[in-house]
Image 1 (cartoon, rainbow, N blue to C red):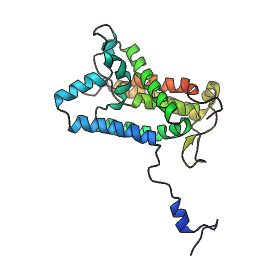
Image 2: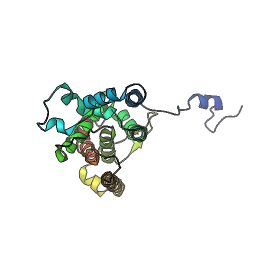
Image 3: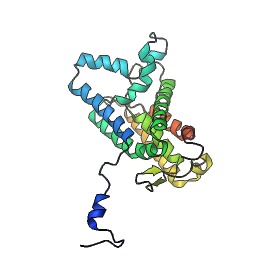
Image 4: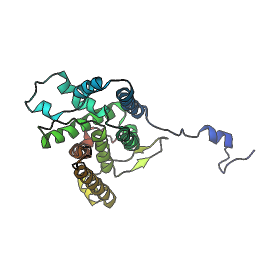
Length: 237
């Protein structure tokens, strides 16, 4: 029977092989909710029911500008909008980025702090969108604001990841702001990310193209970049 250089049998090595989808349970849960909501919208609800769900669950800036009375959904929609998506492409892109940036952050923060971070980034995202478009009558949906927060957090970790615990996790202490600004890799990422968001936002203004809430992306990114330290324990974990 063949063995590797460390003396372990191939059968034993195969027994320790990592699963193809090594995602934290909290990430799988969030992806599952987003997928389930989209499937219900696409294949279960009627058009009228979809319109009701959109009104109750999406973020509508005009709701908060004195044009309409505040109700329960005025307080829940800044959170629930993140689980709704406008198309299969919109859903797929967001879930891929959630898996890529959310997994190492969830492994670093733990379930509770990660969910709080998700919620805070999502609220900050629509908060900036509202600040720019307080009388906008178009709904905002999608997890990209919260995911942008995770990208901002990744920049503060200098994109360092470790697999010492058998799973990807952002590694080391947070970089001070000055050090991030001196990091060529971090600043290149931030610059490219900002340019892409501005360009896609401007492209969304063209006739016949769906509007992209790029201000919400920036709001989420800034929240993650500036506030990730509130979610990391003082001992660095």
